[in-house]
Length: 94
Image 1 (cartoon, rainbow, N blue to C red):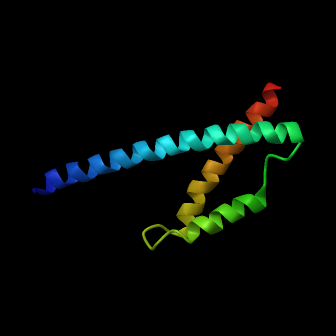
Image 2 (cartoon, rainbow, N blue to C red):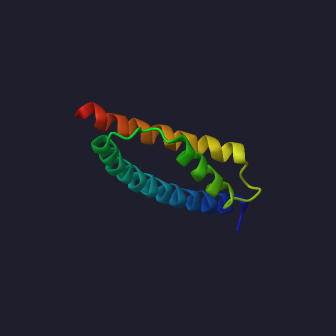
């Protein structure tokens, strides 16, 4: 396999992974909406720092040297911010 063919093959694999990540994010954010509705009805705060720290800690244990904890934290902090934005939008709709 030529270098170019190998690169095309690997990029195709990345595209498949990106599609899976997108599907999982959509699923996660749908669940986030449901949780947001529960929080609204129970008057629970949207931000839960201890939950966020717990998730980051659990995720750190699943990683290896290919991704730094700092990079992983950045990724998940972005997911948390989007999740809070979604939940706040439910609050603002009511």
